[in-house]
Amino acid sequence: MKGAITMAEKTVPATQSNETQIVKREVTRHPEAFVTPLTDIYEEENGLHVVVDLPGVEKSGLKLSVENDILTIEGHVNAANSDTSYLIREFEPSNYFRQFELSESVNREKINAELKNGVLSIFLPRAEALKPRTIDVKIN
Amino acid sequence: MSGDGLRRGGDAAGDGAFSLPEMANRRQFTFLKVGTGVAIYVGVMKFQAPSLQEEKNMSIWNFLKEMDQLQSQLGELARLNSISGWPRMAFLPGVSARHFPMMNISSDDQNIVVEALAPGLATESLKVTALRDKLTISGEKARMNVDSEKYHRSERSAGKFTRTIELPVPIDPDRVQAEYNNGILKISMPKAEEAKPRQIEIKLD
Image (cartoon, rainbow over all chains, first blue to last red; front, side, top):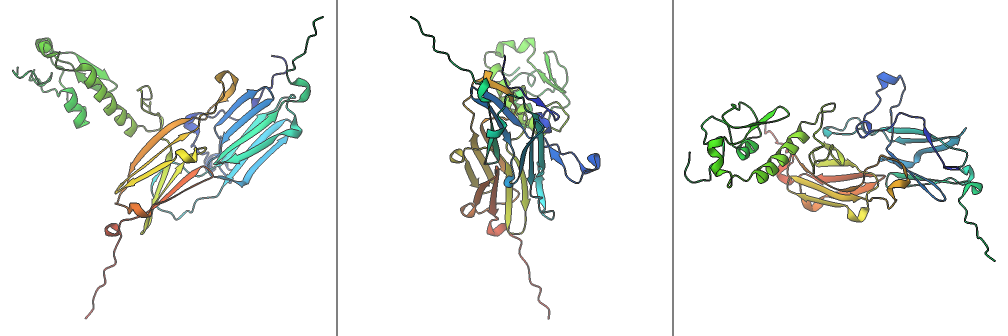
């Protein structure tokens, strides 16, 4: 479809099983660990909606940027108190990182985002010139 | 062969096999002899169907009902045994491939604190029930009202859920506090008075 917005992914695709799988520090030699947040992307007539699950991320810990056509979502969570004694531990609070490539048909000036209950909703509006138009046909 | 018609297969054959509900209750699926009947293998488990001589009792032996019971038992078993990397029995209907929401449970002298990782819940649907040493969380992660053909990517799950956990000690249900922030549900439950650790003073003469 001409003018359709496509996004190529720049990270390892998330599966249900790697949702909580944390890249250990020993593996990456990186001071922080990241997981790929689960994401929904759907397309409406006026643009793309990106919905990302970021449980535990506050507004201050969220970094959202577009640089060189790459949309970067980075969420930081507060580290858990290390002297808590856990009876059961099924998840570890972890930072989130995911990138998407934007196509040219996204209007970068008008991207907006909302964070609510740990879910980030990003709206990527379609550039004006690419919006589907209906043309009135006059019949004489 | 028992005359009451209520005895189940396997048992009556005298070959030492347990009947299906017995096996399900025992939750141990070991040392089954292959008798004259048909053996059913499910994974490493084997089930014995009645042999030919017991077929006259088949109308009483409700196969569907027993399979239903078995299925729920197996589902529970699969859930208990779901170690990462092992095949999970997600094909069994009604059994989730994983726990939702995932929980961290911590405790100190006074409280038990449960944290559940559950982003995007409809807060009005969220229900927390505490009863003595059981805690149940149920709710609904709202399904978005979007046609499926509009999706480029769909990874987030949605729908209703319920999860019950057993707590190590009884709690005081009247003073349970729950808060939902940034997609994490935090429930703190004071331990019941009788479960709290007590310091015993030692008298010295």
